[in-house]
Length: 339
Image (tube, rainbow, N blue to C red; front, side):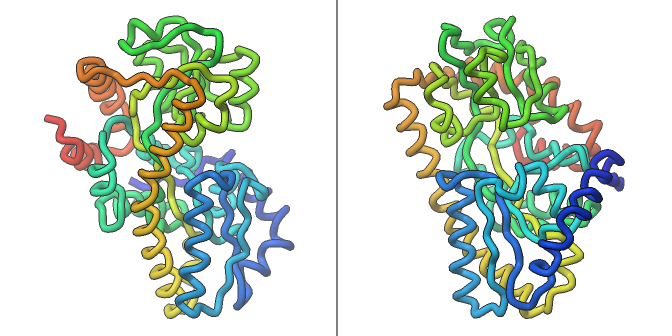
């Protein structure tokens, strides 16, 4: 099955390409530099990975240098994905954008893994998921050099709600929860009993502060720390393993001299090994900081965790199968040891 970008997204990318072609195209095509952009701040693993990659590429004696743009100064994560599809930016670390291809919602699929060890086996260097993703990404003129881990995403409640949902769906009734703007996210949290509200990340803090939503989902510990002053509890559902793509535009990638592609991939591989070694400690450090700040960190009991898993396996996984097909979902069930 081949799914091409939706027309609205394609038009957005064309507009971005036209707007950005003058400043960016020379940087993408020059012999001495290319742009690497990511949308997160310097506390985030994306920044640590980017800086390590720059050092590793220098160590490879590459003739290319990296023009690094952190913190979203070239756009948020969705915009960076679009710009990389269009070729306006040759390299980015960002999340899958399912407006281009609904199969990319596979990155958000719930309860594929439930520990750092199993996450590394599945998503880490040499794991099976990079090849699966590249089958999808190729249709969008992208190549993934690897997967960047962030941590396990969970649910957090804003100050003043006094609610700590741990039994699903009963405890979630009436709670408006921010989810990432993808259909799978809405499917998941509606099935878990919440009222799911799709919302860009840039709007989340203000919405929690004003009470537009009562909670947010898809929050790894580092993001909870960044919003700590408007939050009161963090329920560790660990309903998905947050990870992102290290993407390059496929046309740009193929156009590089083979020797330079090898140097970039070697630098990326070395970076990925380092990132997976340190990502867990970073995640745990920020969880401790969240707890020490006074936010109530709540672990689900094994029974509550299994109840949440059963909901996703029963409802979300068949929904995902309609999008990606039975072959990929059979692979996912084997990975997750689902009968």
